Amino acid sequence: MNLLMFDNPEVVSDFVQTFIPIFRIGLLIVITICATILIISTLLQSSANPAGSSAIMGGATDSYLSHNKDNSRDGRLKRLTMWLASIIVVSVVLYFLTGIWLDFPQA
Image (cartoon, rainbow, N blue to C red; front, side, top):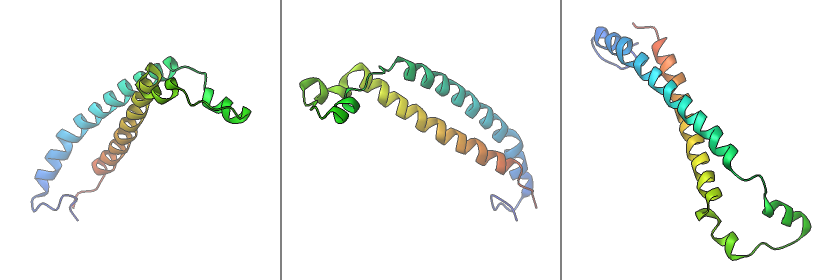
């Protein structure tokens, strides 16, 4: 059974042998860059979490600052962290799927 369902298996093998390894190297570069930026953005975030402590103490944090927290530096870093983590997950899944595709026996 041919993976791409082409009639000519040489077309598939040439594609797999040339494009997929280059694509996998590109994915490794993307994962490395995103992981480095993810570590830096995580370290730059503030460690104080007033919402957690107020929930324990029973205090309310309904202030102007808490309403606009997403526009602050910590809010932007939090969004950046979520985006980078998503990119890393998708890249790792693609990396391993292309590895399975590369090891797939040709008919």
